[in-house]
Image 1: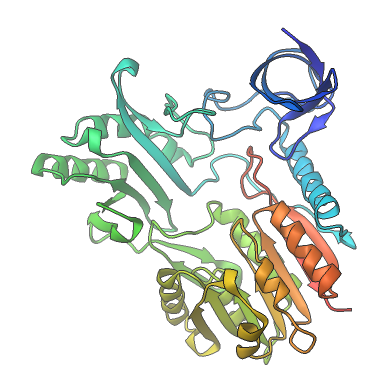
Image 2: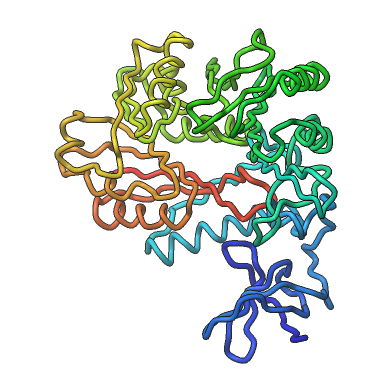
Length: 433
């Protein structure tokens, strides 16, 4: 079996080595280690491989806390010390900005990070009856596989949810539609834990009673989802508290449905919102745009600071939720929400919205390049805070803002929203000179 010395990490957390002129990306290997590896994908210029033996360990290596590490595909970096994970993500961000965007921030923001375990308040678990593995499985998929990992616990879920993985197996396996219930969506709020069961056939009376008994025992609320996410509805108990998360710094409580997009890490989200608002510095009397506003995660805190805010989002359901949230928090007079496809923004459409003093942009992984191209000489906000879940599209859009639109990239830094994964969230500040 070939041996390699690891030189660095790639953006997915794989060890990088060079062997006979070819780049080898090795899962489970860390910088400065000497490892034996086995390739599972070979291309002319590179290979993907799995470390099989660690001959010389890196000083950054730690023992993974999860017994399913290496099998479950949910985490890939548990073997790397937590601080080193954050540093690696910061390097990924800087490298993308320099290599793709040809830009460099004037200063680096301190990384935002928090608890490394039990942080995941949203999750989508798969469920499948597998006779060869002893019955029902509930969990994440195995690494590089459509099979479900045989999980009995999960360290990144809160303990009260991790403790239910085995009981959920028993529950679903005992239902009449055990072969027609492929998914359990977890959504945890400030006052209630919701489990959404994707049901492809109706439950019978015995099934329904089992769900009630389970909900009473484990203090959860079940929702049922017969078709798409919008069809989910509460089943039991019907008198459970509303599903919400809070932003105490801004006196905001956000109601949401369990199938709607919210950040998985509530603690880090609070710090992220505070960081973004401090960078944006909204003031009474200012008119600010929140692009890709979702259900108002940033919009409502901006309004709480006294500014007038226009939130734009492509999903009509999320826009309605944002409107409801503004009313719920007494901020309807300072907010307006519009359904719009921001991936098709043009200078004319942006001009029709009027002038904005400042703007917050929080796009999905595809980024916001058409929006960034739409600013014109007389219609540019003087300050932009860009919250990103993809360093490559942030870098591409930063190139447009800096090299075309004339902004300065004042600051940028990472947000460790997903510890033990290679996922890199970040926030950047752009200003006109």
